[in-house]
Length: 243
Ligand code: NJP
Image (cartoon, rainbow, N blue to C red):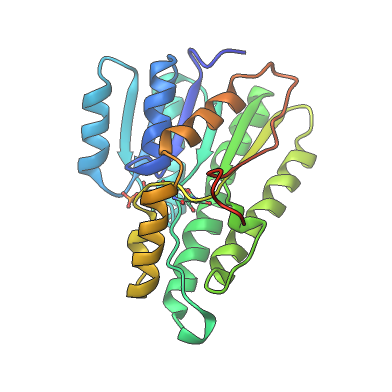
């Protein structure tokens, strides 16, 4: 039931929700294998959490070999994988007629294909173990669409289908959880290339967003349940957010 001793792999752990979840689970005694592209951030996090059992590997989730290698590292060092937290994501919001096709492709590559690569890497391991837990960061934008979120919402909607398919196919063996936050004060606004939109989202996140730690608590809650309890989704918004 407890988090203590569980082997947890986290993608997108260099900042925001992934970094906060790494800290939260390390404090609770989990063994962590964390990945992202920014090596310096991962290194600083591991150093700050010492002597907790946290190791990192630079990982770009758009490369399936790198995702597999991150998961393999968990098995090599800790012998198993209890939880995969598929958290890496980006949100370059824009309206469709801005035709930012490269950004649409990036979102599909990271937010959908990156999650699928994570599932592909852990599924044989968890099937063999007869247990496991896959958690993916979805979004309120996987439930609600606004002008400018069409493609981002599309990627998060896709996660709903993939994760519920996984839940049904692996009933009795693998637990699944979607974490769907509203605005959270992180660095997610960075990838928005429309200047006006970037400032607006940055301002919304910084003035009224949840703290990344609030979302980390939701992840910890989902993990810290008896084996027969699946927390399939947690949707959490700042109380000021209407949609
Ligand atoms: O944002 P941020 P969040 N390969 O920018 C990583 C969802 N969400 O914590 O590679 C590997 O601080 C990036 O690492 P790096 C959102 O959709 C958020 O808010 O070093 N990693 C960093 O660690 C996303 O799924 C809000 O640049 C890659 C992390 O992803 C999740 O929360 C609301 C990567 C992003 O951290 C975490 O985002 C919501 C790649 N190719 C859903 N590309 C919100 N903040 O308001 C990026 O509903 N990363």
